[in-house]
Image (cartoon, rainbow, N blue to C red; front, side, top):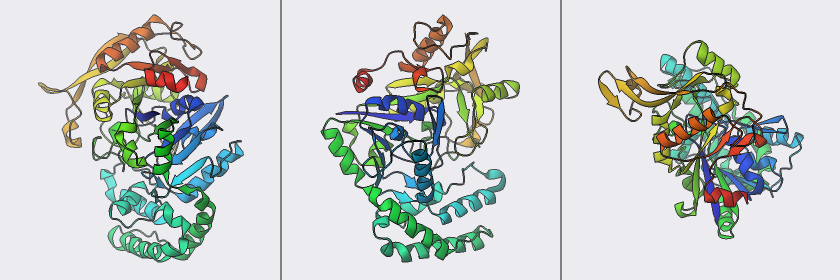
Length: 437
């Protein structure tokens, strides 16, 4: 048995898709275990970019099987569009390679309209949702009224349930959210029937498939979406996502026990980014933030929104390590920091005379919070073409070693560019070495 959970260890956009793609060279399965098409990842193969929002990153490896787990909320229209786009790029996608768990819930048009109307109604108190309907779909799941992928197998059984949802959501839109948006049931149903016919062959028992695969000794990667600091419970609430993003969610979102997880890898940028609203103690303001944003191409894969950029936050990262049981860190986008004479690492916060050693529990507690920094030398060399650890400048070595000591967690790989070949091993743990063997 060999399994690895990969999570983003910051606020998302850390480069998980690229790392999953690298590790799947010898994997048998890649499993997406939570989130929806509100999270995107970009993979670069031979200079060609492929942007994904639902399909697991392993879909570009012909030998890899992929699963959308029960913890995912799936928009059938978006998934079919993504399948067509990836097929056009040359990948084979069929029910033998892609499985959608029967227990995953659907995101439908009324979820999207409610999501957008609710965010608009919040006004200045908006939380920065992507408007993809993810939160409302999870709400239906928690209220035990959602439409599941299993329903795609017998569409006639869900017709009246979908109609009831449409009627309820139209009332919510009109009378509570005071929105002019309206869902047409007939139009929605015609589209959903057509999508059900196409997607039904892909629906299967994901929990059983992965349990059996692990028992046979197959190699499985569990792929998280967003980042640990956006976790619905343990993140910077209320500016969080609608699902649990920590590593433990992999077992719940797929339906296998925790003893089947061998290792947890946390992906982190050499700096921090955040999309939308929410506290960001190490944010770079002004020209420096703009420079890093442009150099790092920090714009959302799904929304195109500009990401806020900041210095590496050791305190926040330690929280991610603790809550997800991360045993190894993969550090990405080191090349973006080239040319900065001095780099900063946030080692704590202060509020007046008070020392703060963890992320505060509420957004109001960030008022007056100031980051304290350790400054380390930067490097002037362009490292984007370097392919071995020994060939990197000594200042890069020192930066990585300083982070390792501060985090009390080893750095197993670094990345100096978007391509597969730009991922450099530093000290991979045994389970990862076995994975790649």
